[in-house]
Length: 365
Image (cartoon, rainbow, N blue to C red):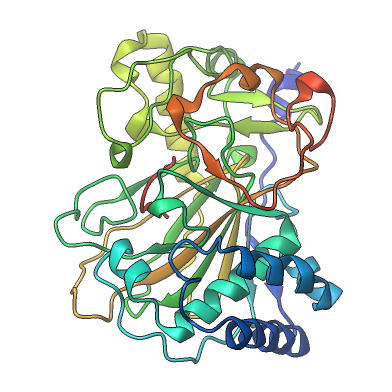
């Protein structure tokens, strides 16, 4: 007789969701973002995007958007853990693709700033946008661009290497529930990879191994090196709704410290995530929503030109107040990394206290 544990993790959906932001909703979003930018001006608000005047505008005016905007950016509803939202035109002049995220923050083009505002409005419709103190200087909207000299890193600044599938900020208990990525420019049709743990097939033995806390997950290279390893984490577990959930980041998990049984089970999970992988190549204006509790994401290699025409995405981390995290995560220290959460509610998000209520990579998509 097939075990219940196996049945819980074998469902498979062939495609990720595709949604449409209707014309009127897209127009309302762009009009509101433009109005906020003109009210604020372009100075003093673009560095970190948590200037009080900007935050007040987002908080006070997000309710002006139609309900269809909220429906479009709701968490993915299928086992794929991802959705592509179409319909937002980005025909404004954003300037050349920045040389790196620092360049993007220093020289924000008015068109880029306006899109930042639109993303914050969308993210606020979905939940609570936040940033990291150690990630792009705490900026609430991150710029994801290839950077010269970083071609082979496991970070979003890379290009020539495969960016391994991973849970964003897997090392931290306050990692995002939902990621929002929007494409400004992608002339080479570089694909973002997405794989859901709810579509993989694993044996009962592998599941028992991977649900047992075995290894820690470390912060990525963008935070430096020499971190002391902390408590081991489970790679998989089943949430309060009995659905598979993951924290997965092979590039920053010390797999050599595990025994052969764990390494083999982890390798099988890796192979399964590759088998169920979707690889949407986002077009300008398309938004990719990734359920960071369910799906891992990465990027295929490409050759960067560094001529102002390379792939350029923007990303927002989003907390979903209604979701609970495992009670055990409340004790984690997150290697000292802290969030910038101006929209955060006061309710605790862990299951331990029974109330519903972020790879802290500097550049990683």
